[in-house]
Length: 300
Picture 1: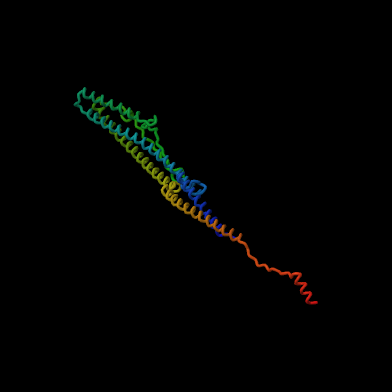
Picture 2: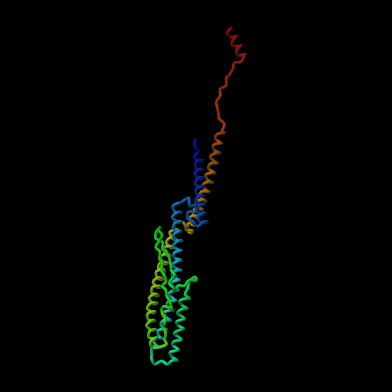
């Protein structure tokens, strides 16, 4: 026969064990910071979250390379801007040297300043480097690859235009009106060329800046998606833990009550089983010998 009290106690114990398992799970979440401390418990979420984290890492790499590319192009743009400034000053000197009224001393002074500016041009071109490599000699390439879906991504590669101070102003001189006029023409041509290259470099830089912004946005999205799948909400977990503690305390109280009830029932059963049973017995009377003799005498 099934004992209801014992069954009730077993149910309480099972419920208490389940509560303890839930408590242990919440504590593991808080300790690890993961929504699923053991990946085998939810392999789908663990795999998806890992993939999102991998994507975020790739996006971070793209963002870093794009930022580096933008920095390199910014250095080239700054150097080209300095060259443009020098060319403007050289054009001013050359324009002054086209005047036939200049004295020899004035012309010589302009020529000397012009020569110094030519040397400054060479210094800017040769001194603009990145990691020991010249940026303005046409051999420097800036690369980055933006990941698209699961493929290899879209590669971006740009070459910084070549700028040569020697080729820009080869043979220029302010020694005479005629040479000064020729210099003005060459400087204007160089100015147009360099400003065009600067515009191109600025466009490349904007392209890399935009690529970096896309990569940063992709990284943020992937990181957020991974966090949704993997990261535990600490505040919510603490609230669940507090609620679970209340449930555990209530279960312990119920288990104690069930134990006391079981003990009382066992005592009642024991008491009932040990009670004495009452039975009714008949007493037989045997006639005495005297009576038998008396009866015999009478018959005689």
